[in-house]
Image 1 (cartoon, rainbow, N blue to C red):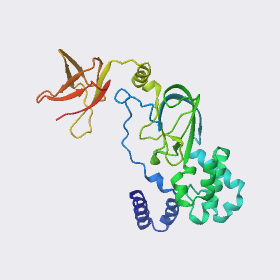
Image 2: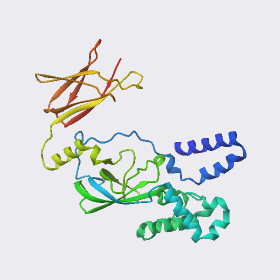
Image 3: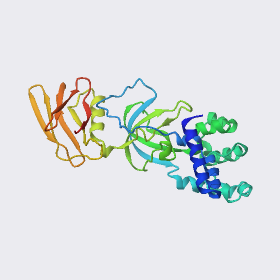
Image 4: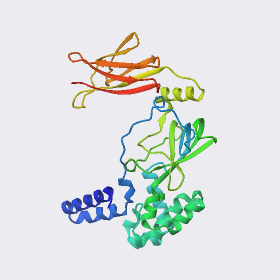
Length: 315
């Protein structure tokens, strides 16, 4: 039994113990949820392309700047609206289970798989390719849980700049429905720096909140690094990072940091969020120095990358 499955069962049991009769309603809802939505576990760490340049030979990764032209379904609310419309069209399915059937979420029990298949067809219609149609037609509960047809969203983006494996004018990708399953919320009309990966199970492109797309307006250094890399040029290097207290709860302001490289000594202080940065550096090896009473130092190698992110703990 998977860790996610044990967690789900444990949670259901605790609710049953504490809430009595009400718990049985929640138990039914939890059982209806597909197991994969509990499985999101990642440390969000945005890729810095000056630390790792793209590898165009890797056909499983695509990196590009694009503007979102369509995002469907946009939210849980829209998915619920689609579900309500589905039961209006199929009142016989609603009558089978009364009010609970109208609120049923993705992942129907085994004896109700045809309802789930019909709902998937209703949501996605002709966008299902022949392989997916076959999977919907013949998949059992575990297979439908794995593929998550009824727990995904589709984004279509107009490609503005291709850095790796996004050659066409439009790029289609998928993400899960919500944050607990590592889904990402696109904004229609938003312009993003995207790193998408090709999903092994269905060969479709996906993104997640583990390595989320970022608005181009908030990622100028990353976009600039990619543009220079594509042009065969090398940008000026930089070192940046965060200062934090020993317990990790505070981001101290005004902490002095020194950077020693070659014959040059540079200084800066952390801002109100505990962040610092040294820009316009030459390629080489550096020593980052901090600490008033007991100076501490850390080596930073900028011979194989254009930037480095450093965490600075205080005593």
